[in-house]
Image (tube, rainbow, N blue to C red; front, side):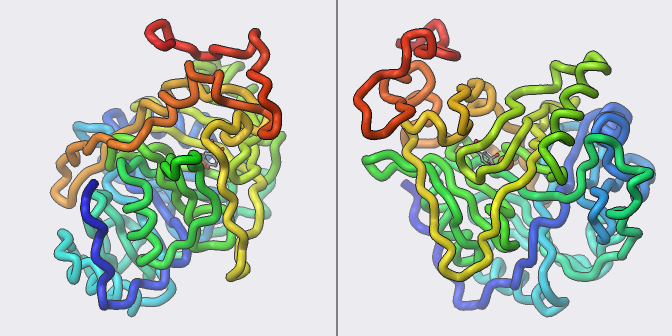
Amino acid sequence: PADPVPTPGAPPPDVLRCAYLDLQVTDLAASGAFYADVLGLVVTAEGPGWVALRTFDEFIHHNLLLREGPVAATAAFAFRVRSPEDVDRAEAFYRELDCPVERRREGFAPGVGDAVRVQDPLGFPYEFFHAVEHVERLAWAYDRHGPGALVRLDHFNQVTPDVPRAVAFMEDLGFRVTEDIQDTAGTVYAAWLRRKPTVHDTALTGGAGPALHHVAFATHEKHNILAICDRLGALRQSDRIERGPGRHGVSNAFYLYLRDPDGHRVEIYTQDYYTGDPDNPVVTWDVHDNQRRDFWGNPVVPSWYTQATPVLDLGGRPVALTQRRDDSELEVTIGADGFSYTRPDEDAPMPSWKQGEYKLGHQL
Ligand SMILES: O=C1C=CC(S(=O)(=O)O)=CC1(O)O
Ligand SMILES: [Fe+2]
């Protein structure tokens, strides 16, 4: 396994929250139609080769920046920091780690000011900014909300091969774990980490990385998620639906996963729980608990484990993937569901009609 990332002597920036995703797409018209026309994100601004979109409760310029490019990939996971001085702190923190760092006083994105972009020790492109243009907060503009209105950017989800190594680094950055998935041997399959007082601003999913697993937007209510499913059905775009709707075990949120025109995964998410107290208890799930990822016991479709989209380095080149060495959640659960349980204290196997859900031909 790779050596732990050293802890910088420089203090980390005070990260407020995940703020926007700079997402490269191969067909801006198709992606713009999906995010604006189908999902109803609000277009804040657009220009040659780009469109900036936001959610209804948002007051900063955008939560999603789509840029047309040759490869469908994430150009930056952008976090807002508390003060202009925290952009300086971010620059010093990553320079001490000898990471690729680029500072732009005029910003990297429309509506965003002084910012620093880094390629972090895990290979991910991050941006830290404070200065940003305020735009109209449309929280009360119910005349513009559709039945599936997306109101906030809730989180990112990043694929990385060594979850404990990544968790340790993100904790140095000031994030705190709220939930994780482990097995009795201590293998960590995934972890959820926060800055804002919800379950996460980002999650680390064990797999070949660095890669984008998904970006998640929140709705106010579960019925908004059902409305999105109905809209996709009515538009004959039900093949955008990858997983769900359902109730998560981890996070307790109601969820739906979609795939955009490039295959980027988008989660629609609502009603997780408050985590803001310093002694917020960490929730650890057993990888064989069949209710961990779907609280109703519905299986996770294999593509959810196996597919993710690349990230770019600061020069716009896709970052090569490093394969995971620890056990794979797909391998130890789907197909081997004789080891999964509904009631931990019962030695009863899953009912035969439920065994083998999504068991692939080559699996035992
Ligand atoms: O946001 C999330 C919350 C929970 C889950 S899980 O599928 O319940 O583990 C996945 C997720 O990371 O997308
Ligand atoms: Fe998620």
